[in-house]
Length: 116
Image (cartoon, rainbow, N blue to C red):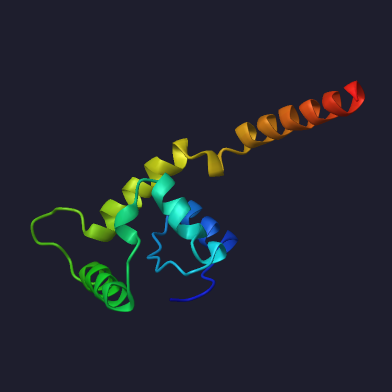
């Protein structure tokens, strides 16, 4: 498994509404995307090995190049829709909430420091 496979780049890609297939690594830095995909409720994009990675990519990309005759959305379009909905409630992308939480944490640290 790869040791490192994107962090901020993957977060930006997901925020742009583009699904990312993830093959987790052995170190924490190689599993960050797993946490992001899990929090977005998209564990189907986390694979266990290179063969599963290859098969999923072929399935998703192959389908995206063909038009569906039945009018249903492709798997890629369904993933994009799920991703767009997930971004709306995911704390990772809620900047106002993050700032408020950070300010609260700073205030607690300051109060603790002043109290000795």
